[in-house]
Length: 220
Ligand SMILES: N[C@@H](CCC(=O)N[C@@H](CS)C(=O)NCC(=O)O)C(=O)O
Image (cartoon, rainbow, N blue to C red; front, side, top):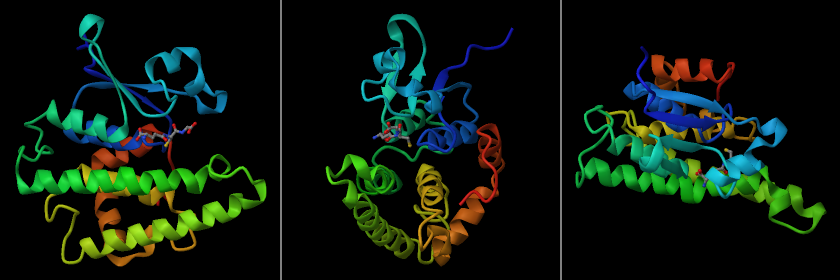
């Protein structure tokens, strides 16, 4: 008999769900994927909204019955996976310098960069003037370039954001870089970020994730 999966990850290919998906593959935790069909607006269905009141992706469910955990927010999902798999080799010790840096980069990437991507991709939500949508996206792209410059500088002399050890921050950076692949200056074109992306994309767990989501090269 197959073991009951510990996690269910609600995903759509290439969406923010891809970071927890890569993380689950990396640590080898048992999980099941639940496809949320955005082409049919399934993320705004009453069933999905009952689980995720903002109707966004990803969503993680763990366990069942009274003890069931229903969790949204990409960073919260990643941190919970790390916390509940402390011996995975992916969880820096609480209170360690690495853990503090991990918080810093995850907060920066979700608060500043992921939210700027929302204005880049969904400009119509940020202006009531239809003629201004392109300008909103252009301003977002400029802000994103500034953020990628900060990450590029932080990577000087390092293989990964935390140093020589890969972490969930690097998986997050791969996701954000993929989203910027159509920008005038794609993140992959920056030397340190480009080299990190090559290293991360070589990983079997990352390759499996991309394949499972049906994402084809070029990935970034
Ligand atoms: N703060 C949320 C943002 C999630 C989010 O915006 N997800 C996108 C996909 S990458 C989404 O569901 N978009 C659909 C929509 O905005 O209607 C998180 O980190 O989980």
